[in-house]
Every structure is written in structure tokens, then in C-alpha cells.
Image (cartoon, rainbow, N blue to C red; front, side):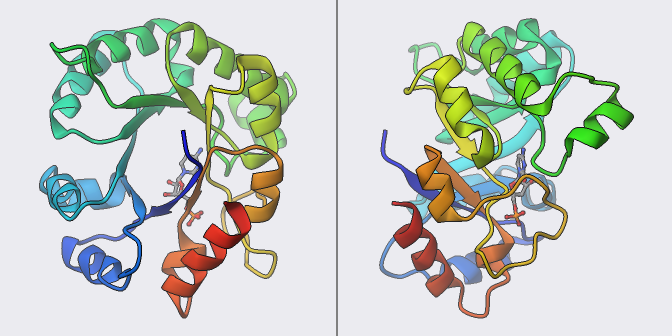
Length: 231
Ligand code: C5P
């Protein structure tokens, strides 16, 4: 599985997304469609980007009772995305049901990965707001193990946790890591962050980069810089 940079297309319209992506002429980036764009445009935006030749990570972070997630995943499986996700906090039973729902009659399915703890959550907030008292690294490892036991392909975590996840779950278990910033960028709402170069050193399989590319003065140059640092 090749390493890649995934651009988080956090826009609120198809028009803005397509004109943003039109700038990338040399290489079609792997893109992430999150809640904002999906809620604004619905499944058609997935079909449109797929038709333009982009690989797609559909980041809808499902978290509900197992039966509901299973049925939702079964609907999403028809969209033919490359990767989709849910919250590991929904339990192993929910992850197993999701996998079942996502698997098409011919046995094929998109990659399914689980969010461990959001990269905007600090250990203090996890302890105080969520009443989770274990160290953050231990919670991420435990959720990753649950995801692996449920048969998932990997997790979403911070680059800072990628190495530990690989140690616990094996090298082929994917680490998809948002919380990426260039050394000279603002962290904004992200907390557990690393540069693309450090994410590479720590063994991330895919970095997910939003504002450092989408809000850059020259997004194509920022994307190239990510590729150069990370791959
Ligand atoms: O702009 P920025 O690089 O912070 O964007 C990160 C993207 O990754 C956002 O779309 C966010 O929803 C997503 N994400 C995250 N942390 C997770 C899972 C997804 O930041 N644990």
C-alpha cells in the first residue's frame, strides 16, 4: 500500500471544490470528502469526483447503534469510495456490523478505518470532558486493537501515535493521520500535530491535510511540499 497525501476538501459547495481541484493539473490528488461537503452536496459530489479520477476517502465518522451503522454502510458501499470511516468509540460490535454492511455481495468493499481520538482532543479534555482516565496513547492503542479485532483495515490517529499503533497492530494496519501542519503554520483547533516530514519518520501511511493546503496562498505548491516532505 503506497503512502499518499490526502487533501481534506472542507468546502461547502461542489463549485468551490471543483474549481479548487482544477488547479491540480500534474497529479490528481487523493481527496477527502467530509461532513461539510457531503451534507451540502449529497452523494453526487462523490460520483463527480470519482468520475474525474480522484481516489476518495469519505470521512463521515459514523457512530450509532450497530444495526443503524450496518445499514448506513450498506448504502455507502454503493458509492464506490476507496476508504470510509466510523468512530471506534461505537464499540467492536458496531465496527463488526459496519464491516458486514459495507461488504458488497461480491465480497469487495472500500477500506474501513476507525477514528481513535480526534486530533483536536487533548489528554486533559479527554480526562475532564469524557471522563477517560487512561493516558491518551493507551486509549488510542486500545481503540486500534479493538478495530483490528473487529476486522478493520486501520485507524485515524495523530502522526504522533502512528508508531505505537503499528507496534501494537502490525505494520500493515493502516494509520491515516490528520493533525498535519508545516513548521511555519498555525495549529488552529488541532492539538496533536506534526509536520509531514515528522509524520513520515513516525510511519504514517497517509497524511490528511486540510487548511495547510486549502488555505495556502499557493495550494498546488503546498501540496507539492507535502509530497516532498512525506513521500
Ligand atoms: O484543516 P485540517 O488539516 O486541520 O483538516 C483536518 C481534516 O481531518 C478535517 O477535515 C477533519 O475533519 C479531519 N479529521 C481530523 N481528526 C480526526 C479525523 C478527521 O482532523 N481524528
